Amino acid sequence: MTDGWATSRLPVQTDFKQGDKMTKPTKIKGRVWVIRDEKGNPIRNIDTDMIYHNKHLAVTDIGEMAQFIFGNLDGWRDFPQKAEPGDILVVGENFGSGSSRQHAVDGFIALGIQAIIGESFGAIYWRNAVNAGLPVFRAPGIMSSGIESGNKIEINLEKTEAVNITSGEKIEITPMSEIQKEIYHAGGLFEYGKKR
Amino acid sequence: MGKTIAEKILAKNAGLDEVSAGQIVTSRPDIVLSHDNSAAIIGHFEKLGLEKVAIADKMTIILDHTAPPSTETYALNHKRIRAFVKAQGIDHFYDIGRGICHQVLPEEGHALPGRVILGADSHTTTHGAFGVFAAGIGRSEVAVLWATGELWLRVPESYRIELVGRFNNRVTPKDLALTIVGDIGADGAIYKSVEFCGSALAEMSVSGRMVLSNLTAEMGAKAGICYPDEKTVEWLKGRTDTELELVIPDKDAEYEREFTFDLGEIEPVIARPHTVDNLDLAKNASDIEVNQVLIGTCTNGRLEDLHAALEILKGKKISKDVRLLVFPASSEVYIEASRDGTLAELAESGATIMNPGCGPCLGAHEGVMAPGEITISTANRNFKGRMGCRESEIYLASPYTAAASAITGRITDPREI
Image 1 (cartoon, chains in turn brown, red):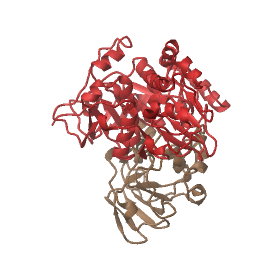
Image 2 (spheres, chains in turn orange, purple):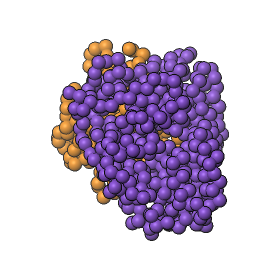
Image 3 (spheres, helix red, strand yellow):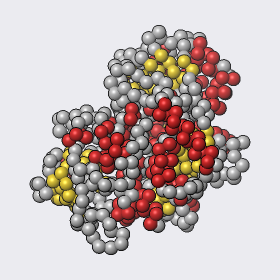
Image 4 (cartoon, rainbow over the protein chains, first blue to last red):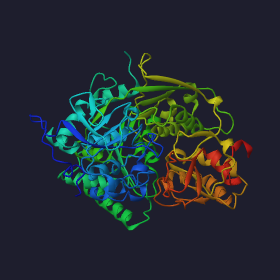
């Protein structure tokens, strides 16, 4: 697989909304990985070198990038082995700060990660994810909710909250902007550009 | 309500009367920047099935990240880029040896006040020093720009930073920039336009302003814009025929947060590993022994920086336990520093004079570290593993502090030399 915008490893969902532009699920459900350190504290400022180390920058094949995800993040180096297609990532403040490298988004897509929810994101990382059609959500406060790795979560794109199915807890999320929604449903910036 | 610089530039660029923070606009950037990563962008572009790029005249491609290439893969990437440049008729191509993209674009007269520059590099914010709205974007975004010339942008909210007072001896814009990042935090300005103004900015050299704009990326900013003025115009003289338009904000522009920094209160500082906001005074780190000193990069590789290093090193020798690497930011800087004798004198003090380019800053070549080693660097990032080895450490500092540390072999406040 070489095309970053193909999301073929994403699990098939049937929850489609009708309409021309709506081609992707509007509800996202999956098991979460909550990125904390060994003491259980949220890890802030996870930069793109921790997500995808500069040693592997010459890689251009998206599929190859999966194995290097979190290769420089203490406690999470085995993430590519643990993660399964359909999983959802929950992260702390300023996730993806640093360089503009797109490998740090594409690697998660290659692993089949379905969505990323975080306290906040690096500006370029956020755009890279949006433009790759990977659903990303800001949810200030999520790390201090009771969410744990292994919980199941459901995100409704039409609502301003997600639900932790395991605990029943509601989590406030900032809804997708219109442009983010359009790019997501188009399947990425390239497809969005073609449609226009 | 009045408008910020970001709002004014983006409104004009999008062909609208006015825009406000939060609005999504379709931008047609004046300049699109990419570097060695153009090889991957070409891959994305080719998948779109188009024969020709839409904006050959707006594209700038600079080979600086692994220049000259250190491996066959990088060499192949460069080869592919050169072939693409020829086939597409891209005039603004700068091959290895010309320098770092963020230095070359201003020198070649591409970074002009009022313009929009989008680049596949996070430190594209540097061009904000010239009153440009300049932002880093991703590779696929650049591929789309090559194909269509257009990209959606969200108009950012803005911070205003007023600079007053004067630096004390051996305190530099780098110390100020690190202090600002330390105060506001690595995530303190995510997706904001940070706009610098004040009497001290007006007095500051363009070189110093580039340090400020460059480091705004390290607090998450979308853009870091200095109010353009006659110094901007003077610096660009002879580099462009385009009539310059200096965009400054309205008096009643709406800023989300406002800060004032007094330069007289700034001291020589460092950023300890592994985040740029891990601020401390240089004098508090005198127990840290360094193996390597790096002077250069898009943050501090300009003539002013090399002169600062020489001011410290003149007539002295570096510690025998230290390697000092000096990378002029561009061929222009290299030639000037060569003609005025700076490079020769630095070499006499024990420096290894390297070629214009990014050097080891991003860990690809030309001075990567071994496990357990420590570098003090004038660069902008000290992330774990940034310079290749994840069991090494990076301290960030000004050229004065870096040069002083090269003499003593430990982190040294430059006022002690």
